[in-house]
Image (tube, rainbow, N blue to C red; front, side, top):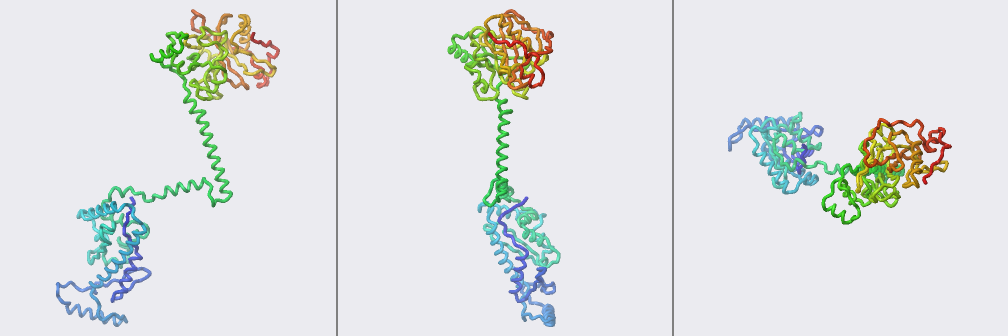
Length: 546
């Protein structure tokens, strides 16, 4: 944990300078070695022995002092005749050091600034003072840490507690360690200060001082995040001092990032968002009494079967609702609509919202869903996306290309307001939405034919094209339901599923064991062209609806 506070700190060099200054001003004339900054202190023999208060110095001491003067004179030293006592020297040293420390502390405090408000600073100081004074007896004190002997301690108070936060701690420094050759704990703490450390953190660590919680969460480098953001942006956005090559590189990078973002947005919308928002209407909620009453008032001519009341909810959502298409074996469940043309619902959902998936819609030329009957052929169109076998519209119809798919779902359900109807799958074939190269278009989306004979001729044309026989029979009076969707055998290819309406009183069960593959189905001319094979039906008759 790093703690930054407005702490008074000092360096070894400044401490040495203050000692030098005090030495020069004293009559004793202390010498400092500039290379090691080692302070030459008086030896033990220079110190007077302890005497009782008011007693005079003993002759022995005077004699010893006289010998010392004689030795100094012999060595060529020019000292003042009357040397001050050691206590006077210490007082002078203390005063000079105190002045130097105080000035240094004030200077550093002005540079570092306050990290907390004055009120918070005073509160922190008070907490530190309390912790220091109330520390248990077993905890080491400053005097024990910074000196190996309690002899001659010198205290350096930095200032008043209310004005200087960290300077309330009293530094008790033994004079014996000032001149040691080996670095003491005190020296190491001072070196830590000069190298960017925190004296407060050291004092707290060694004296078990509790720090208020608000100081523990201080961000020691609040500008680093801002610098990181500026550096990141400067690597992307061209600057006024960038070279031409650097500007080109940054512009190219920005264009690439923008292009990537647009592509991710398009792909996410196409393959994730739209399919997710596209409702499959697997379960249709039953309408309440209010919805039924509203429907009856607005549509007095529509007679709703009791079994189809649930469809009123869909009709109230979209009045173009035609019927609810359902193929259990394929998992296809979707409402169908009938618009005023065959284009609007190509790119609209059932709620009329724009979507490339669209909504299954009935040929606008077919009869109204509530007219009371079906046309000879009712066509429903829906999208089937390439390489999306599980899309939610007509993609599941791909399974009808095989006999196995037919056996899974031989029955098509169409529930309408006027009743529930079933269609047995009669045939599946590949056709085209355009005229072929020979100018022929096989029209499988007609609504009515002129006669039952023309209808049976159409059935004969289907029999040539169907991929397999289902075993379901066809009569001239039957009604057809044709489902048409995209396939990708060639350009504008279509997969067509033809169902025959279950006759009144007929069982809906289909015997799928009768299904048989057609060995040579008839395809559009484009199919053979793309395959690069000869069209065996090139000279066959070209049926046209009458």
